Length: 371
Ligand SMILES: Cc1cc2nc3c(=O)[nH]c(=O)nc-3n(C[C@H](O)[C@H](O)[C@H](O)COP(=O)(O)OP(=O)(O)OC[C@H]3O[C@@H](n4cnc5c(N)ncnc54)[C@H](O)[C@@H]3O)c2cc1C
Ligand code: FES
Image (cartoon, rainbow, N blue to C red):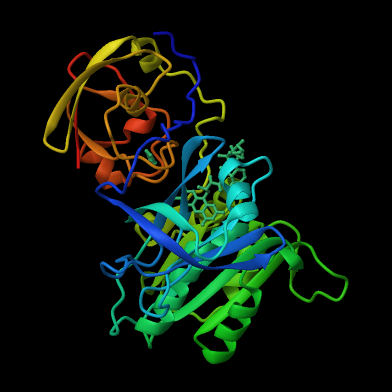
């Protein structure tokens, strides 16, 4: 079989009949227009029991588009402690398959196939905590931050929460009214600093792209706690998060206190060729999943996940970009090269975890255990 050199998005066969393990069939309770190009999709809780999720986690939505099943990850914007119905917020991407399909077609009463919530962009809440949670959001990156902010306000009465939120213009601020209300209801505990790319003439806040200077100025206006009592969460476009990371690194904030969620991958960016690239040749791999052992050969130009799915092995996955960790497995033998490892923490990498959706075998003895 011939395979293209570039990673193709997996298109599932549409005849998968009913709900499988880890899949849920959810009914849409309501669709709320947040801005001209963003909607929130609220789900009814399943009759079998409430959806169990942590603030900051995401759902994988599966929808049939042009006769094929597509999967995309969407962060929950709701708090499990506050909101009765879980919801995700989807912003349209120009030419994007899923975001436009959902924006155009979805309505209350529709059923959606969804993968159970997962994700590590979260924190453990404790009523005794007295910390400052500083959130940096850009555009649709507000979604998991909203979930974290609501939960922190509800669960940690002694903690303060601040949000530095960058948007193109005033009309693209998702959750504008809810954020204003949260500020009013939590004086001294919740503060939003808006940054607008294009601001109206009477705008008193920060203007232009989020820069290190703006971050410095914004941080100076926030309540001060010692650095070890402060935790940072960021989610937004790659260039914005690079600036935030650089600013926090300049302030000597330890990496363990900085949490990052990426919606898009850097894998497409031109990367330096490494010596390992020459070792990517057709090699057999062993994947152990759900008590079964599968052996198959992965060609250069395809990933371990991609080839497994082509072999009709029902492996877990969502983003296929090395971001979400839905496909995570442990490489218990041999060595792989990952095109992208952003989704994994340093500890996970040290323990041998890999993301098969962006992995190529470098040796002939690769064994990956998933689940
Ligand atoms: C863990 C995780 C959580 C996510 N949470 C959210 C969320 O809460 N809300 C949300 O709206 N999206 C979220 N995303 C992004 C989402 O999964 C989709 O990638 C996005 O909706 C685009 O899908 P699409 O099918 O419309 O576009 P596609 O058909 O997949 O892509 C069309 C084109 O748009 C580019 N593209 C893809 N995503 C983006 C983007 N975000 N911005 C700019 N260009 C892009 C692609 O590279 C491609 O060129 C999340 C992604 C991850 C990995
Ligand atoms: S499917 Fe998302 S990291 Fe592999």
